[in-house]
Image (cartoon, rainbow over all chains, first blue to last red; front, top):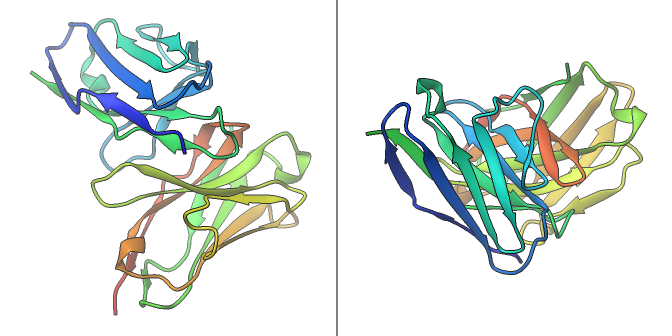
Length: 108
Length: 118
């Protein structure tokens, strides 16, 4: 099983600042990597797939990069609605899917 | 706009079978091209993929749950279902259904909390 590790577990950021979230795979997943946002009491929402392609309706302030084992989600200027938990998920081994443990982005 | 909605009992007794249904609207399961997945999230924890089904009935399950999981589809009702047998307290979680685009999950249901308790 491919293990996904996210860091940091919690990220404290002020509104308007840039947030950088990391995700590492235990083995190469090529560009088969997705990012999701989850707010309390809600289902996850797809942000990024293919490591860098924004899903429909996702603002341009969200960007993804990386390939192989190292990936980054960047939120260029945090808005109030962006404070949430973010998960990465690999699908290189599809149909087996595995998620990272999540990064909570909180208000500093 | 595709929408998914989970339904089923919120409370299941230990050793019994958990049964949930996901109703899809805004798109037809039988049109093909997509897979239909179940995912769960233990309270305050991360996400665990359970398995998927294709409209044809082909399935694939998480090896860690495979012995207890059955996913089925009813294309006439545009629904797919999850059965998880011999449940314990460790199966208490929010269960989500989602559309699987061969790896990434682009539409999700709102989730339903299932508690395993006597």
